[in-house]
Image 1 (cartoon, each protein chain N blue to C red):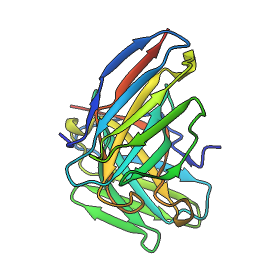
Image 2 (tube, rainbow over the protein chains, first blue to last red):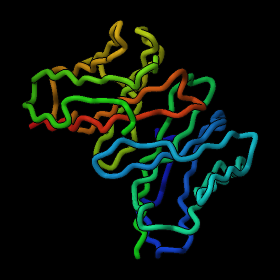
Image 3 (cartoon, chains in turn orange, yellow):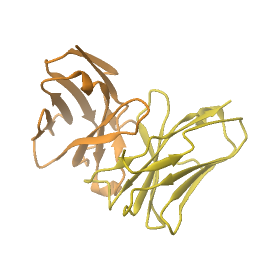
Image 4 (tube, rainbow over the protein chains, first blue to last red):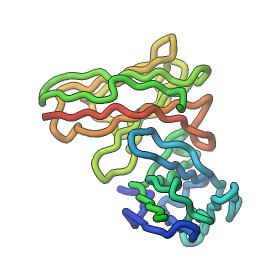
Length: 113
Length: 114
């Protein structure tokens, strides 16, 4: 049962344009969401997070939007840079699950120069 | 460099065999997590240890076991290996809980079962 879904396996964007990565979840108990980025041959690294009490969190070029009614979140990267090319994982957590993070399958972002 | 060290980086073995994956967390981190990433799959949570004690369990098979030692390093033991166990195994650590905090991942151990 995939509770966190990233339905787009890959996304290709021109340098300087906006990248929008989407994530849907099914468990309404999730109340904290995180994005991780992964380069080849490296482990995932934390990028940005958002609590369910907010609908937006911004950190430099990265903004995460949360739509609780739709159980949907998105990561916006503006402007996209070639160095942003990586796999992006969405993750969610719920107090009832303790410290377990539930990850999506990831989206491969390619930023073309 | 996340500060989390995993060994070996690559491992090739045969079905039915047993392997041990090792993880050294970041200095000061008490929590260690193990995740499995199979082809085209997300990171599947296996197990978490906090200061030597098992804290949370995910979809970890009975053929798999883990432990965290007094020096806080952790080992994941995989036995009676099957072809489907081929995957990338990540270890991650955190100061406390990962729920709202940052997980620091190692580079992973790629296991190939032939």
